[in-house]
Amino acid sequence: MLDSGKPVTEFVSESDMAGLDDATLTEYCNNAIAAMPAAVADYKNDKGKALMAVLGNVMKQSRGRADAGSVMAKLKELISAL
Image (cartoon, rainbow, N blue to C red; front, side, top):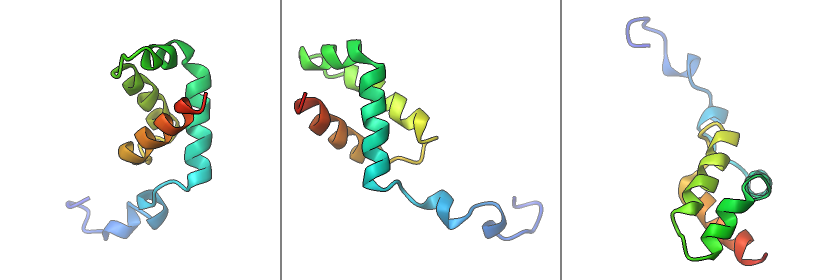
């Protein structure tokens, strides 16, 4: 990018920098919870690190665009409602 002399806007758009809306984040979290029942069960049995696996699934779905803090909060909210 620096060698080409092109402006940053040619490489990164505003949509690339935008986060996810709440509906999309909830959808990704629900998908991850459904796809990883063993990790969810482990988390419910006081194995906090198991939630990191579910977080990884959401980050994969969002291609890294999701905010990890927001994902963790949403996952905890959704799992506690189960």
